[in-house]
Length: 223
Image (cartoon, rainbow, N blue to C red):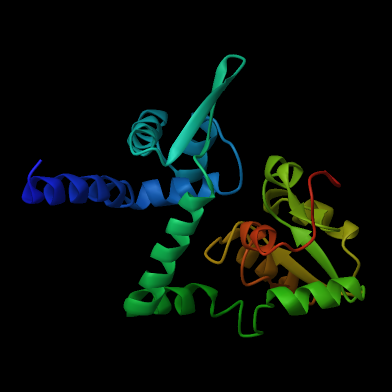
């Protein structure tokens, strides 16, 4: 193989990976799969896609070996191929945050009303939770909580929040968290909690970032 042929061939392979990240919906699928395995029906519902379109995106991700799958009875479960995929997604996210002013504007426009009281970071959350000063509420779907969550967190999915307010102590500040820094579930929960008189803030990241930082997690809890 000549030098030019080699360079063309290897850069073409790099471009296959880049092309897999070239769809907003495929990036969202990677974001959801960072929480754990999903079947195509669940992925379609969580990303607002038809099952056919979700399946097509998954096949593209599988072809570039970013996503793997396994059979579980009659269904197929999809997962990220390895932690490197999450790392690549986070690098892409960080580059967009650094280079594109639109990202900052979108974040301010959406989260500004919630984060007028600053969101809480990892270390302050860890210390305040250890001292019993806050109640940590996981507002993701129950199956995501069961697969892994911040140690000591209470599972109250956003859809059930209004009906389960009595389970939340009113004498402590509530910290809501969900899937990551751009997950809207925690922001919606904070808005609802504040409207009902609770002191509430949003964790500025999500469960995957907490877990990957080596902070305390559990794999089962209050459902």
